[in-house]
Amino acid sequence: MRIRFRTKILLSLLLTVAALLGGALIALDRAYVRKVEGMVGERYAQGRRNFDLSTGRVREALEWGCDAISESSRFKSVLEAGDSPDHVEQAALFEMEYRGVWAQFLVVADVDGKSIVRCRAPRGASREEAKRPTERHAAAAGGTPPEAALVQRALAVAEELQAGAEGLEKATAELREFLLDDGRIYLVVARPVDDEGHLRGVVVLGAEMSEEVANRLHETLVGEDAAAFVAEQHFKGASFPPALRVEAEAAVQDRLAGVGPGEEADLECVIGGKAYRAVLSPIQRRGAAVPIYAALFVCLETFVEFRREMRELTVGTGAVAVVLCIFLSVAVARGVSAPVLDLVAGTGRVANGEYSARIRIHSRDELGDLAESFNRMAEDLASKEKVRAVLNKVVSRDVAETLLKTEDLGLGGRLVDATLLFADLRGFTALTQGMAP
Image (cartoon, rainbow, N blue to C red; front, side, top):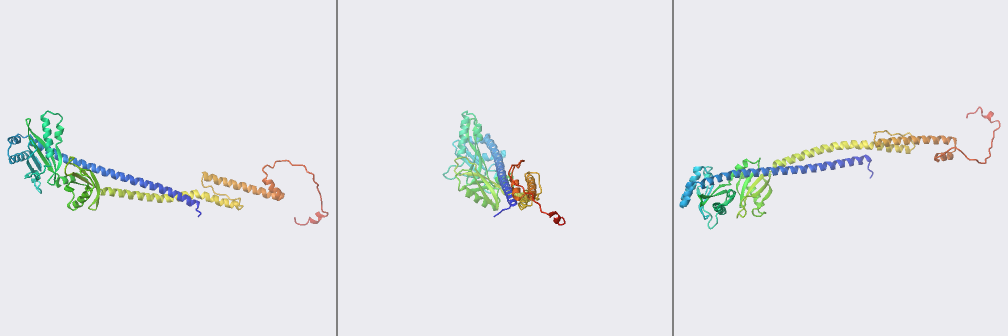
């Protein structure tokens, strides 16, 4: 199949443009993906900072409360007297009320680490009732209280401080952790009760990571982002609306089923018809019996919409560019092929003996030089044909061909023996003088 020169040029230009535009679209799409990933990462980092700030404020309030109770002389005297658990509980609650301490979890342990008092705020308590741990709560029968390890660390720190060890202030500040007690997640802080070098026990205060805390954290997040506290593969507190909570919890359960205890996990899921990316970060100390996670859900709808709009804009711009490039390619192909086609036509005319054929010079470039050379060639062929015609009139054709083929005629000659015959017709002049040539 014969393909015209103009078609070849047009196809080559279109393929080149298509390859360049395709590469540009792919590069832009990848740039959008990186941009979206960076934006999602920034949203998660901001959410994590907000989580740390929110829990940090709760922790500071608990630390202040622990310090206030453990430094109270009234409370120290109660522990020194070895009063009944009821009296110890009343003394602790009095100090909380008197000093405005806010907490939902209270433990008072003796110098052996045994719990004297364990109280918590009732389930479903009102906002005002949830400020105090008014419900007596014992550890599971035959089990170790979840705060036992924290109490032992507090006792160890107190003993080292009494022994004159240095640099333990930081260790005292680290007496905090998240724990799970009777299906509820608490952020707890412990402080040893020291009475002039005599260790009296340990005070532990905690705040429940409840729906209210999750909703307060949600207020610091962007758009439809959400937060949740997860333990035993269930939400213990989440900022999702009830209609979406079951769906989100099911996605978390499916993901946690495939990771080891206490390992960080991430997942992408659809909740309420919208895409989310979540990161589940363990927040309890290593070795805990039940992993506790802080889950942050970043809604991807805004990023998906941004990426879709950018793709549409890029594709639309590319389509306009393709149309413009088609017109440009046609113009370029026509500009390049027109002189070539003229040259082909002119060559055909010359081949048919039309030495007067000339082609128009379209531009002052290599194609213009070629057209000019063709015109000069046609002029030379016309001159040569004219000489051939003149020679054919004065000499025989063989002589004329010989002369034209000889590259260097030169002047001169050669000597030959010849016989000349001069003849005339008698009465020829008189016979022909009245006749036509």
